[in-house]
Image 1 (tube, one colour):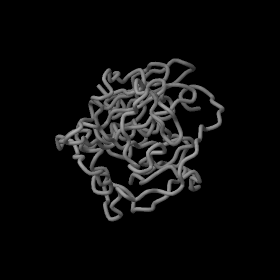
Image 2 (cartoon, rainbow, N blue to C red; image 1 turned 45 degrees about the vertical axis):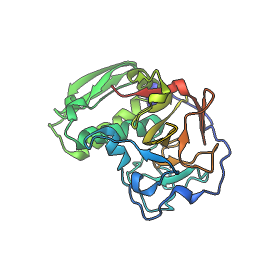
Image 3 (cartoon, one colour; image 1 turned 180 degrees about the vertical axis):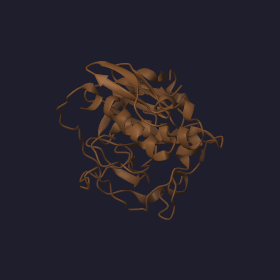
Image 4 (cartoon, rainbow, N blue to C red; image 1 turned 90 degrees about the vertical axis):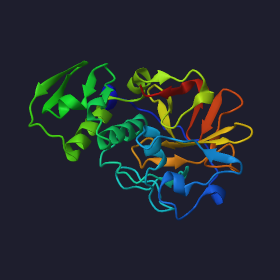
Length: 273
C-alpha cells in the first residue's frame, strides 16, 4: 500500500506532439548537458562541481532513442520524453513521480558522502533517516504509527541503501515531499534541483535538471524530468507548448506551467533545504 493510502485513479494524460524536434539534441551526448544543446544566445549557468545542480546536469543518459519502460517491462505508449536517465526503475510499482525526485536526491547525497543528510518524511509525518537505517534499525508501521526497531546488522552498502529507498517510496509521496520542501517565492530564481510539485491523491512532481540564461534578455530556460504512474523510467520531458524549443521550458507568462501529463502553477515550485 503506497503512501499509507489505497488509491484508485486514472492517470492524467494530455495530447503531446508525437514528433520530436531534434533541433537542440546531440544524439551522441551521453549526459544531460552533452545531449541537449542551447538555443542561440543562451548559456548554461555556472554550478559548483560538488552541488546537486552539477550532479543533475551531468547525469548519465541512455542512448538517444531509448524508450520509457514501466517497472514490469512494458513500453510506455505515450511518448512524452526526449531522453531517458540511465538509472533503474526497480521491479515493483514504487518509483513513481515524487519517488523519482527523492531517488535522485538520495543518490546524490549517498554518492557524495553526505549520508547523514539522507532523510525523508512518510505521509504520516515520520522522519525516516538513512543514518538510523544504516545502523540496522528498521521502520515498523502499525496503522498510522511508525517507529524504529533494531532488527538487522549495520550496513552502509549501496544494496542496503536501495532497499531503504524502496521503503521510502512505499510510505512517502507528493503530500509528504511537498511539506518538507521550502517554497521558492520568486519563480525567476528557479535553480537546478528545484521541483514543481502538487501534493495530492494523486499529485505529481517534476524536477529541474538543467538551466540556461540568455545573455542579453535574461530569459531563463530549463529542462524537466519525471517518472509517472505506474512506476517508469525517469525521463526528460518534451515541451508540449513550445515544440520549437523543446525540450527547453521557459517560465510561463501566466501562472500555468504545462507539461505533457500534468499542469502546474508557477507557485508550485519548491526547493530542498
